[in-house]
Image 1 (spheres, rainbow, N blue to C red):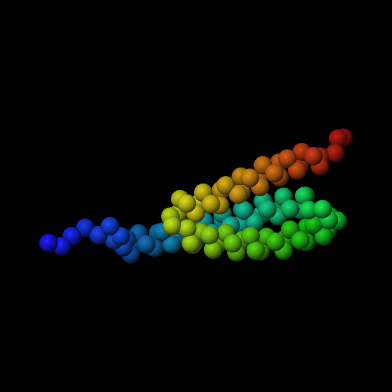
Image 2 (image 1 turned 90 degrees about the vertical axis):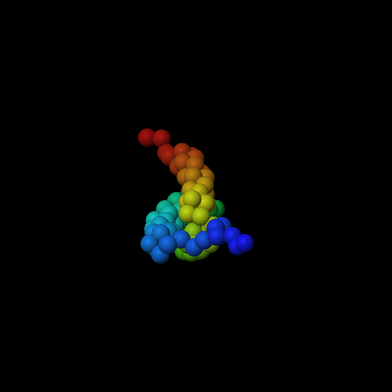
Length: 107
């Protein structure tokens, strides 16, 4: 007797297209958000002159964006991909908040 249920059945073509569209949107917007937060954080925390820190952070943002896109399309599920972008973004956001608090000059 053969097993008629397939545990790794392929999704329908419409569902597959929605999954790819979701990953594409997550890669574009989530990767951009992660790269932007990382750029702001690195611009404030790199121990360089201000202009060199901004230029270095901007250059690093291209690698961060590429890594985010690779991560989104290599993660097993869309939820795991979203969590994989959200956690570093939250950590960098917290670091940016702390860095901004230490750089604010009193009036």
